[in-house]
Structures are given as structure tokens and as C-alpha cells.
Length: 328
Image (tube, rainbow, N blue to C red; front, top):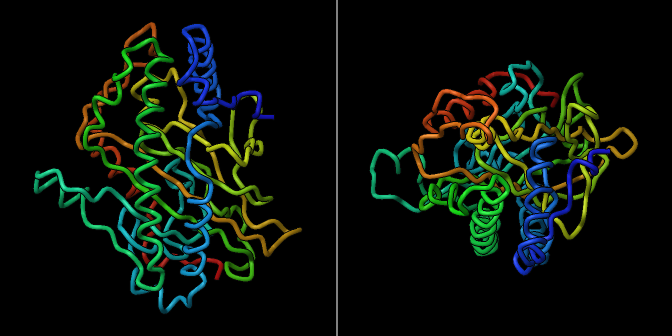
């Protein structure tokens, strides 16, 4: 099982522990990110009532008729409703597949930097559905918690590499981020999955790290490791699933692997299963130069990349071309 390679990291113990305890935690983080790219984080301090309220409110919107939702339709990287057939995450791996079986409401960084060109591309205002007015205060509060938590996790990651604690957070003074509320309805909504069709196809995330609040389901998250192939991701109702993305893997010179994962289609034995995931994608300041850490930390020296040129290329890659047929 991947649980052996996805440890539970208690942030409460990390915060309050002595040097020996913190060193043990850092070593476990390093080992897990080398093997699978995933952690299960507890002691994070996020009130479970907050994601529960977001799910309840978002579900009301997602269950509206498509004609009402269409006014908010956007393409990948936009701020609004990503409808059926908008994404195929497996495209990022160069794999052709049917579109992902999900809908999303997508948010992104919206506080301007003062650089007109950067702001026009990466810091535009978010859109809020008038049919779900309670969503804005709930999501705003959740995003504040995710930003603080992500910076704390980046400090832990830097420590796990034996670096100064601010090695990554020095590049998150005014970062970009994305936040998706992903709705995975049953077959009554999406139809019978096509061959090779998933709720989300196999991929790695693109940024530094991802913080996921998920629900347990038969058609849920799976993690891929070299040692064990595809396995159901471990679950703790009090935990958040954290994985690193492509930029962090490059930054560490492939010491750490971007966590490869997928979300299974609606299960045949529970076709009405409905899940909602809250996915926070953390990145870095716009146009950060990401250079591989040298040996003995890094193992591969990648060419330096502009973080946001890289991110834009990845977002384009997973966009399903207009006119592509879905299973509906």
C-alpha cells in the first residue's frame, strides 16, 4: 500500500517539538517526497466546518441547470466555471484520453502587484456566482488559511533539505495560486465513462505544492509509485493530502518527485457516488527563476526556467480543444 510511502506528518508536533523530534519529521518528509511526492498532514489547524460549508454551498451551484452555469464558463486558467469536457489532465503527460469527468469552479490570485503586464495575465479579479452568495466569505476565509499553511509547509520542506527555512518562501512574497472546487458527480450526470476516461486523468501538478481536502470514495484519488504502481491514496478525515508539483521537483534537481496521481471514474458498484474536492495549487512570485539545487541535494541539473512561462505552457497543455466530444 502507498501508505508506507505517504507518512502522516503532524504539524502540531513539528511546531512544538524539540530539535530531535523536528529532525525526525524532516527526515520522514524527505524520504516520502523522494518516493511518492505525497504527505498526509494533520495538526494543520483548519476548522473542518469551513470546507464542509464550502462543499454544501458549491454543491447547490453545481446542481443548477447547465444553461444557468454557462454564463460563468471559462477555459483552463480562467476564473469561473469549468464545465464538462474542459480539461484532460493526462494531456500534460502527452497521453491522449477523453476529457475528465468533472466540473470545477476555479479561482486564482487576484491581488494586483502593480506590474500591469503581470497583473493582466496572473492577477485578475475572481468571479463569484450570484446563485451561491455564501460562497465568497467561505472561500475567502479558506484561502487565507491555505496561504499561511502553504508557506509553513514550504519552510518544512526547506528544512527537510537542510536549507535555510526561507529558501522557498523568499519567493512567495506575492505568489500566484489557484483554487479549484472540483465536483465529481455520478454517471447520472456524466454518463457511462468512455474507455480510458477518469474523473481526472493521470498527471502531476505544475507548481510548488498542492494542498487537497478530499472525500473518501470508491472513485477517488490514486497515487502512482515506481515500487507499487497505482494504489488508493491513504485517507485520514482529519488530514490534508499534500503533494509537490513539477516546479518543486525541478527546484530539487529531481531529488523529490512530483506526485503522480489520478481520480478514478464513478465506480460501477456505486454509480451515483458524488464527491467534492477542494484543491489549492501554490506557486511562487511571478517569473521566479527556478534553478536546480546542486549536488549533493539535487540529482539532475535541469535548465533554469521562468516559473510562469512554464506554468502557462502546462495550463495550455491540459486544455481540451473546442469541439472535442465528451461522453454526454
